View 1 (cartoon, helix red, strand yellow):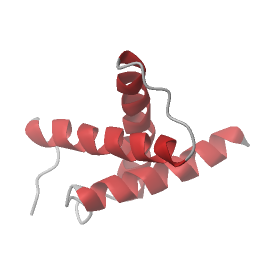
View 2: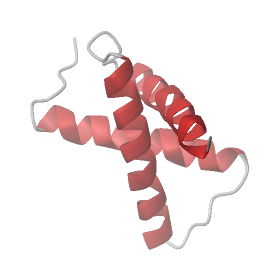
View 3: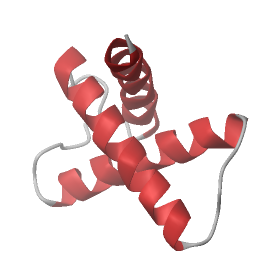
Length: 83
């Protein structure tokens, strides 16, 4: 059950990050979920390296920020392009 909830939240996080980064038209459901899950992990890892322990709504912000950073990195690698 936890895996299903993680995938749903990852999809929402990836979708919001793709809207922020203006790549929403290029990303489908699977890309949103993958970017959301991996980007959330990236965001939490960076927050941990900075000594930040996000709680409450800040956890969601760190997840979206990490996913947006992942989209930015993938865009620089040529995977996603802004329109």
